[in-house]
Image: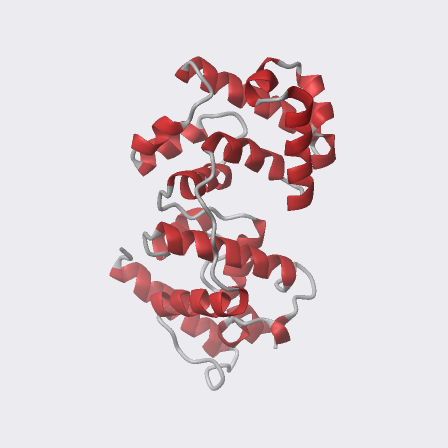
Length: 247
């Protein structure tokens, strides 16, 4: 539930940002809830419905660590290489860091990720007596988040992806692409914590969050680039504060 004060402030700020640049004749006023629904609908119109089954939490956790500072293709190659080398994650846990790093070299930052992966697996095995994260399903959102964040090298994005896509818990993870897009749209201010802000604004609907997460990432990769974004072909340009400011 969005607090009325948050809703009013967000809407007022968005309207003011457009008004300062004389854009209110081409961009209609929207409340923040309406803006979010409009964004979600336009992205679904562009990219279609998302079909994604629940993922294994441990696989998701290790895969998300491998995804840091690389693309999906190299993340997948690094994970396959890891399993090809060791067979399963129990064997990865027992392997030397150097051997893990060599196996995931293609994913970039391989030494740093190898240390994190080994530490995370060791922590899970020590605290849970097996490599099993299913207990998080019975935890509250806050409890599960705290437990994951206590793991070495696990931040809010990584924890959020596990909670949303493996357990269906209503937490919206923000990556680099989503941070850039939501700031340009005027949803997240330059000094805001994007996780805190987006989770305060979005409806507590895991399916809605998952679809929006994947669609915003795709938009950021394909059109809303850090430099030279392709605004004329963007489905959100009609209500984009950044577009209004720079046009």
